[in-house]
Image 1: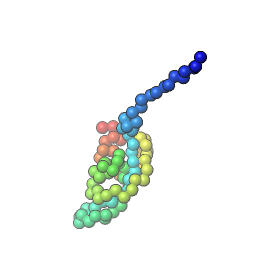
Image 2: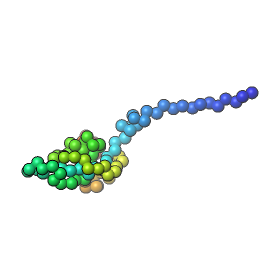
Image 3: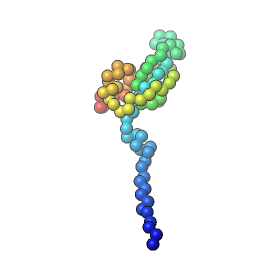
Image 4: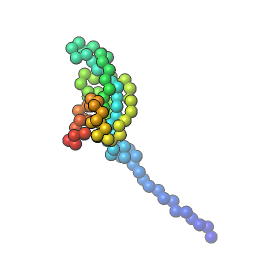
Length: 95
């Protein structure tokens, strides 16, 4: 008699799981000069959901680098004192 093992399979939608959790990421960006519009006038560290969201920051020029994540901890985002994009502010406030 041959013993058969039961094969257990679970279908996990990894893409779906990624979108379920809100991740607050830290980006270093260049911003344009407010008066002259000169590119790369200042370097800022901001909190954004992704690169596209970072481009929504006022006077955005370009993303220099991704520095890391704060996970989904809203309190850490608020206590960091870092500037945030509009979308992050709405998310942290629960709007």
